[in-house]
Image 1 (tube, protein in one colour):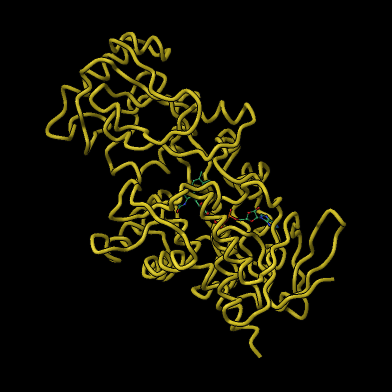
Image 2 (cartoon, rainbow, N blue to C red):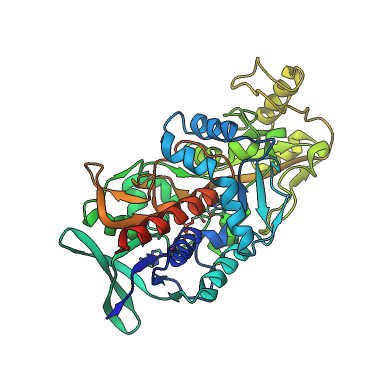
Length: 447
Ligand SMILES: Cc1cc2nc3c(=O)[nH]c(=O)nc-3n(C[C@H](O)[C@H](O)[C@H](O)COP(=O)(O)OP(=O)(O)OC[C@H]3O[C@@H](n4cnc5c(N)ncnc54)[C@H](O)[C@@H]3O)c2cc1C
């Protein structure tokens, strides 16, 4: 039987930040990770590395308002405020660990992007953990928490050598969401959820949520998730067995979105795409015929849309006329022609106020051949529901009291995202609360 002061479950950004923070406070930390070491496995590793943080042009009040309004007013004010206020500092913590940045994100004022994206981020974090002599045991899967005298004292784990126990004075759960668990997806998101393309880790199967539930934790907001509007090519790619870092569609707000019937169904210009892609992916996959839609645009915006797609079938489907494009997309040509004409005729400035649904920003005429389209669908990026934690990262029970010696951070937690999402805000959420959970657990075990 192995022992440590603090056991961290999961080696993504939340787990690594928690381990580093607890180690810096003098705790003897052990990290366990279910996946093999040599394959990209965490959502952190699959991420685009976009990191939203405050700046002179993106003050804390604006970031906070974005989080509150995009969640329809649901985001927990206290949890959100801390995440926003510490986002800049969190970027500095990562810089100090050697994370390099580019300003290539969709909105450079509001977010930086890790050079090398999530793969580089995950590797640098793991190297930083190893450099402090914190062990990571891979292929070690936690399946139960040890509860003794009403406090958590470690976890039961499965390894190739068999089942065993790791004893600790506190546990930090950083095992991600439940998006890769078809049974939980059906139960909480509905059967349609399993038709979405899983964009990230196949290992995030809700184990941490299940284990915490067994010791009385409170879960909430389990019915919602980050969708992600993606190129349809990724779906085929995945069906052929490839695992790509699936980047979402960018800048589609300058075109129109139509369904297989050739009709518009959403205000494409409600916000720039980094504030709509997470909900549009859900909308397309769960509500449109066949779970697909098309971004329609013309030669003027061809270079703008979807610049960093990494899957097969690069470049848009093109045609010399809207009728010909419709035929290629198997849409009724008359219906698509009618939609595009009505759209062009309604543009006033950059808006189409008379259209139903309206287009409130970024309207550009679709008039110059070649006429272009991308077929899109919805991805399942990560789940929004999970464990309730307080501002110290303590896991709360159904009476909202902390469960002694149990902490959680990252995607496994809830309370911040619901309905919609601002691109690049999960990584700072995970970094900030990973560090808080590590510091709180270290403080808890201090004699
Ligand atoms: C394609 C994609 C792109 C994204 N792009 C961005 C972006 O640009 N910016 C942004 O802010 N967010 C992005 N996200 C979201 C973000 O990456 C995640 O929300 C975040 O990385 C989650 O970090 P985490 O540490 O909580 O979980 P993860 O990084 O997923 O780590 C959890 C780990 O726990 C392990 N685990 C699970 N169960 C067990 C168990 N029983 N025992 C032991 N280990 C276990 C898993 O194997 C995994 O390695 C993206 C996500 C995806 C999928």
